[in-house]
Amino acid sequence: MNQTPTPSSSPLSGGEQSSSLPDKGGMGRVAFRLSIIVAMAKNRTIGVNNTLPWRCPEDLKHFKALTMGHHMIMGRKTFDSIGKPLPGRTTVVVTRNVDLMIEGCVMAYSLNEAIAACGTDDNIFVVGGAELYRQAIGLVDTLYITEIQQAVEGDAHFPKLDKAEWLETAREVRSQETPQPLEYHFVTYRRK
Ligand SMILES: NC(=O)c1ccc[n+]([C@@H]2O[C@H](COP(=O)([O-])OP(=O)(O)OC[C@H]3O[C@@H](n4cnc5c(N)ncnc54)[C@H](OP(=O)(O)O)[C@@H]3O)[C@@H](O)[C@H]2O)c1
Image (cartoon, rainbow, N blue to C red; front, side, top):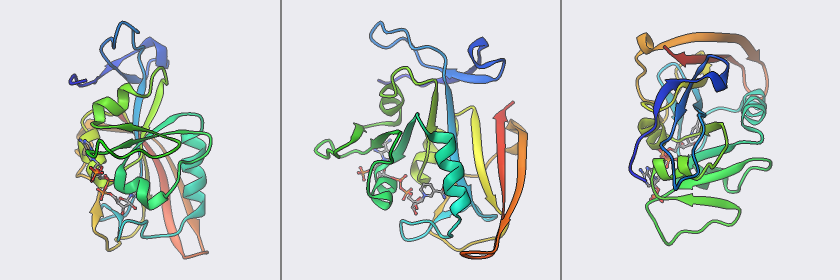
């Protein structure tokens, strides 16, 4: 599909913003929330050598709790880094390789096709990596960002955010000593 979802207000999401897709094949796509979930360092690093640059078990739990039961859209390289579909969620892998089939995943050949593949799910997550975030940032209405409170070297980065477009609605300050000392915040932003 070639059309792009645009954020819009919806009574279905309790007055919060949501996106809506045009009717697909007469199925009548209902309003839905499209969110990005990411863990990002102060210098916007999200990855190195196709893996995460830090170890933060609580962030993985946070990711699991938010995404459980929903569709997760990810780039093929992020899928490679995870290596398997994550239980309890539907993994939609975006690739330009039409010959690629991954058992247990839904394949999509563009971001819009991936969103359409999420069917009637009203809470869809774009989970990376950098290439997918760059394409999704203009479409999503919610950002769940784990803000790592230090700069970290890496080769994959989150796109620059225009903070004027976003309203911070939640911030939880956390820290860990093991497996590595780390201060981080769980932050939610809604598009204004
Ligand atoms: N910190 C975090 O929260 C977080 C989350 C996720 C990932 N990451 C990190 O991010 C890094 C990976 O990011 P990345 O930017 O290299 O790769 P990516 O975004 O995961 O995947 C890129 C691939 O997705 C496919 N793709 C992208 N746009 C497409 C489109 N419009 N149509 C069809 N296919 C498309 C292509 O696959 P094909 O090459 O198969 O065509 C492309 O090579 C890793 O280091 C990973 O650990 C971090």
